[in-house]
Length: 618
Image (tube, rainbow, N blue to C red; front, side, top):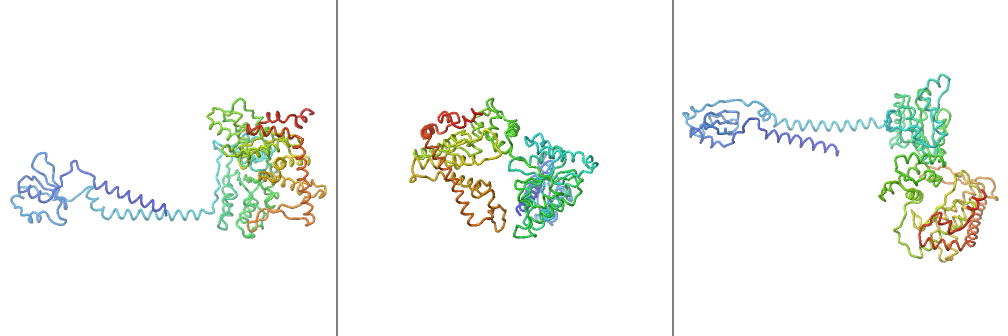
């Protein structure tokens, strides 16, 4: 309705403007002077009129005086010239001396005067009908196209297309997808051998590891049309729309074969069937059924390959994963240190890095970071450099961006009392001291009492190398380090002054101890068994819950074991802090003075720790 009203206003004022322009247009070389009938009578009586031209209800009077403008006189419509003269008492002798000519109006002015009274309303009416019909046709076209696929197509000749060279790391994954690329480039050599390329390729991995980028690289490498759509775009509020869009998408891909269909976030429509309130008639399940039918329906050697990406492969329906559908599964894992270095090199290509910035060092400081996190780090570093009016990105901006991505921006403007600053310093010093003197803890890189994100202060510890597995000894030492702040507050201020600061530490420690008992079988009393099964329960808006597969008696034993690990870690932290109380007090004084202590200064204050001893023995 808004567009319709706008169109109506535009047409109305356009016609109004045209009419105004035409009404003021001058079609002659000189515009006559408009006068009344009295002036005409006066000129006739003065015998100064040369001739009169009658044009309908207009009288054009030509005067004898040289250079004088013609006069234009408007008479009553339907009244003849002779009647007009008789009414004003003009003598016939005087009229006989005047050359009177009666002419019918011609030209544009005549036709405008004749047609304008009824033509303008007609044009306005026709314009309204036209725009009304356009609106109705638009609504009909949308209704008819409601079931059409909303997939976006990337052309093979796209200048910004990606190739496998743009995908850093993930060597095994790239080797897997090369078969798909070879088939799309030359399917005949596969069919001659009797081989059938997989119909579906499922890319699995944590968020930010480059699943979408890998799919785009496959299409760019094979130079084929690439249809990409999100799983959520299939499902609408109307029943059958998702299935209709699936059919339309596959029909488009078949027409342009060889082609690639990429469905991002496949778990949005590919979840296990039968879990929803609608049963088999649920719209999402209808869409999934249509995807299964389409993948079975087209010729496997037609050249249409379906690639899907998900970070939740555990919730996908088993029918999707059987041979003949998504039977090829490629895992894209978190990058190791070499992969991170390659990824950082790609993202640093168009950024002016200073000479002191080492890509390798940044890769060492970012274990557990995904490709998206690494890209975000360099982007944040570039933003920080701009804010500091620098021409190049220094190492300080890069290290600052790592902490910003991990913990959030610094809160230097937060007002804290001296007591709160001191308590924060003791809390963070407790974490750092325990982590420094326990063998399995990661080296402490930085300690600060400046808040970041939700934390009032932080202790940054990172491993020297990538770790794929965690041992029981490391879990115990990490628990002690996590509880180091809690233990320090109790030892320094007593139970009466214990604050809410360690609440997040207690939550993290409890979750870690619970996982040790329930998931990893690290309890001697409970033995090698996993307790509780995570199942996706989608019913009445419920979320993930643990399915209880043990008795109440075992539940009590589980609680005892969780408490055992936590109390053991607490005692270990108390022992370390008591033994190294002098170093901790010195670190607190440095923190209160400088607010932030880097790794070199921290080691200088702490002295030789187990990490240094371990490096010497190696």
